[in-house]
Length: 119
Image: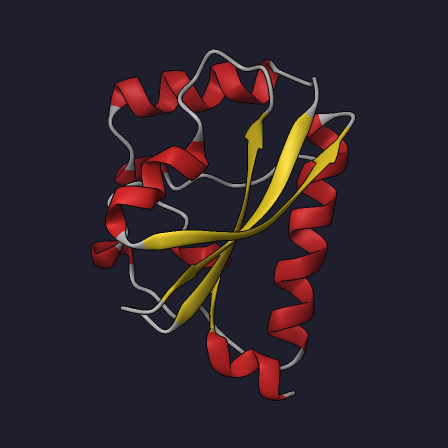
């Protein structure tokens, strides 16, 4: 499933890493993180056996805690599940809860306020 990456936000090395990740179509986790600091959830994907650094590990030191993860057989399936989760949040009228400036490793568009649990 193609997706748009705003290249103006990415340095050349980040573009290269993203392209390498997108070529990978092996087992992939969909994960849900929670941040008390931002009062937010974040959904994302990361390869199970991929050489790039695990996205879950990147967010841990920034105060995000793993709530749940599910393994999918392919990256395409995991990306579709991630997109469905984000779309369901947006269908409820819940926009991103964190700004790009607050997210050193990206992923702000896949966040939502923890108040979404009240719906």
